[in-house]
Image 1 (tube, chains in turn orange, purple):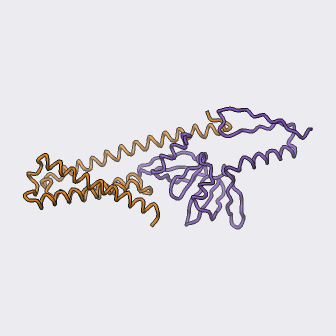
Image 2: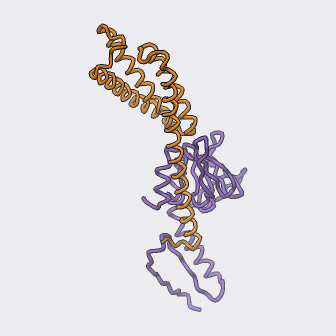
Image 3: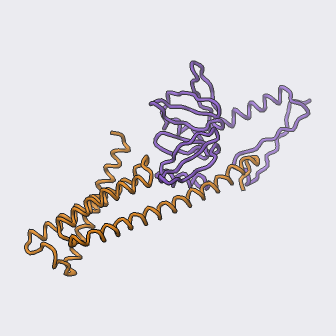
Length: 152
Length: 155
């Protein structure tokens, strides 16, 4: 295992823990807001299952975002992989924890996909602009050097 | 002809690298020696790298290097026309190279900024770079912050 790989694993663990905390926090907030009519919350066990489920979802979604830090993966590949993994776990959580009625799943899927598409687009255009700027600065730099080493 | 030479030093903020002009009637041996001495003195901070081409060892001036990269677990120093092998590690080479001129673009590659044609960002979401010898390679996104700084001339 290279140093780079073990660094990625460290990053995954940190992000996964953060994700678990976020999941638990959201679960608590929703519970405090009274969003539990349709959920299996009749007993303490049901409540614990909801918390554990939310935490696991956080672990996979936030932990999985290390995909963006793998240098050899392009932005598109990283987004697609993160999308697939998160969507899979999210749908599983929805089903098992009864978050949405089954006939709502299509709407959930559409918005989930839309969110990733928007994220990809923002990333794409931000990088595109960054690279364009770098090319402009590079032209100045190399042009100055050809003028005889004088930099203004 | 006297053996003494006049030396003027002009301070000018526009020059980051010193520029030397020799005024002379003819290219005598003395002039050649002066050029050699200046080149040697100037090169000490960022010395030429040694590399093998087949069995021959050659010194490669840093200016001529287009990129240094790992290929099949071997380190290759590439100039516009030639490729040389070296037994050094990429990190030890990186330490010898002029940090204002050379960019570490990924785990396995260093490029000469002044030999870059252009960078590009494609649909796959990777940053490509085309070099003066028409090689195309890619830049790690995590290196871009450092690269931006160097191109802007910040330390």
